[in-house]
Image 1 (spheres, rainbow, N blue to C red):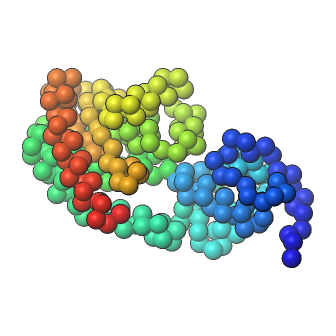
Image 2 (cartoon, helix red, strand yellow):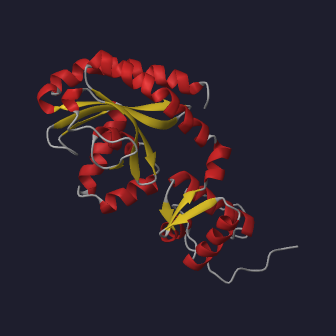
Image 3 (tube, one colour):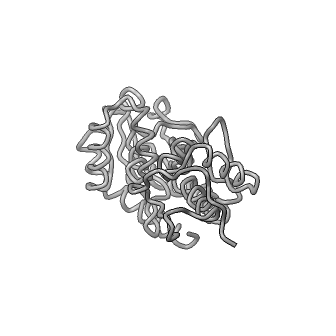
Length: 262
């Protein structure tokens, strides 16, 4: 039986990455629900207004479908922000990947810090932020070291910007809207990271702390960033250049390890 016409008029979705499929120019209820679920899953964290705008749906319709998705434990809502539920993450394998990163992280970071003599950091993206999942810091860098599970801004610091450079367009737009950097400056920085394949930052999060970071990509998806950092007086441009081969070797070793579980 055909679905009753939806009283809400659809907006223009020409720029939406989530295509409609029905011949009448209107999604079925199932298609709308799946498109909204895809939007939440792909951005990692967003709000109803952004979803509605991206999909060309009325806000009231978007809230109605989000409520249904919440009732089936497919999305979670915290303070007006919607995230994929742990149930959905476990289906996608994200929980397995995160668990494996935690298991192998210390081994890789200790080896990396031993070889480089610098702080090593493993970070992941959580919505519009980065999280320091694991870190090993020598005594010389104790004052600039992150805390384990510390939440970090995506627009500042090499390890965080590497993650932002490979985030969905909607996440990038939301971070830009709240960043202290201008849109032009941040977009240029992200483009350079994608071209060069790495990021280098100087005193962006902590005074006198520099960092070099590469993404760890598995099957086309950036799962985390691997970073070397240190006090600026012992981590200048020359040192960063000399440490690139060491960091790249660690990135490849971690990628090979993750390929077995992802």
